[in-house]
Amino acid sequence: MTEKDHKNGNQEKLARFAKAMGHPTRIAILQFLAEQKCCFFGEIHEVLPIAKATVSQHLKELKDAGLIQGEIEAPKVKYCINKENWKMASDMFSGFFSQLTGEKGNCCE
Amino acid sequence: MTEKDHKNGNQEKLARFAKAMGHPTRIAILQFLAEQKCCFFGEIHEVLPIAKATVSQHLKELKDAGLIQGEIEAPKVKYCINKENWKMASDMFSGFFSQLTGEKGNCCE
DNA sequence: GATATTGTTTGTAATTTTGCGAACAACTAA
DNA sequence: TTAGTTGTTCGCAAAATTACAAACAATATC
Image 1 (spheres, protein in one colour):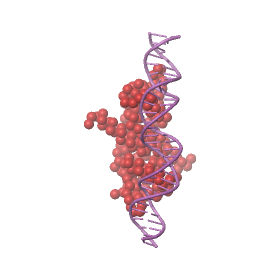
Image 2 (cartoon, chains in turn orange, blue, red, yellow; image 1 turned 60 degrees about the vertical axis):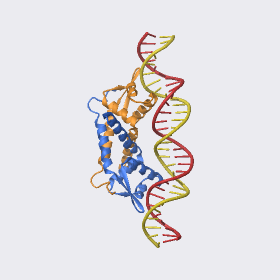
Image 3 (cartoon, helix red, strand yellow; image 1 turned 90 degrees about the horizontal axis):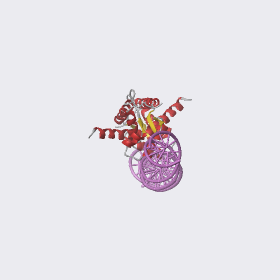
Image 4 (cartoon, chains in turn orange, blue, purple, yellow; image 1 turned 180 degrees about the vertical axis):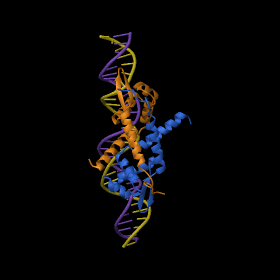
C-alpha cells in the first residue's frame, strides 16, 4: 500500500468517525455512555426526548461506526463505549488537528 | 446559563464540527489546507476528482462550520484554515474523548 | 468595450438521513 | 400457555446531502 493510499484510508476512517459524531443526539448518547460504567437501552431512551425507534437507529449508527458496542442481557440490551475504537478515534482526531503547526494553514487576513 | 444548558451547547457545537468533518472530501480539503501556508480555489479543485461546483459547495460547508475562511484576491479566491476555530475544535474533541477514564464506559463482554 | 479567467450560484436528480408509529421478535413471569 | 417487558425492524414521509452542468458575476487583460 502506498503512503497516499494509506493517507486516503485514514481520511475515510476519520470521516466515518466524524460522521457518526455529527449529530447532537449521538454526541449526547456517547457522553451519557462515557459517564457511567454501564447502561441499558431503556436508560438511554429515558434521558432523550425522542421515540425509541429513533434512539435505536442512532445506536445502530454508532455501533456500525465502531464507537459503541451492544450486548443482549435478556430481556434488556446493554450498551457501552467500544474502548478500543474510542482510543483509535481519539488518536486520529488528535493527530489530525495537531498537523497544523507554525505558519502552515495561515494565509488569510 | 445552567451547567446542563452549557453542556448541551457544547454538544451542539461539537456535533457541528464533527458533521463538517464527516465527509472524506472535506477531510481531504482540510488536510490539504493544513499542509501549506496558503492556497487558491483552483489548487484545491485540481487535486480533487470532482466538479468545481461540488468543491465550492464543500468549501462553503467548511466555512459555515467555521473551520476555514476565504478571501477574495481577484480574480482568485484564497482559502485557509481558521486557526482560532481549529484550536477550539481541537480542544473540544480532545476534551470529549478524554472524558472516558478508568472503569467508566466499560461494561460489555 | 470585448474577451478570458476564476469561482459562485442555480436548477435538478438521486441518495441518504432523520423521525415516527405500528408491527414484530425474543425472552420472562405468571 | 398466556401475558408482559424490552428493543428492533418495517414502512412511510419530510428534509437534508451530494453531485453535476449550465448560467452567472466579478475582475483582469487585450
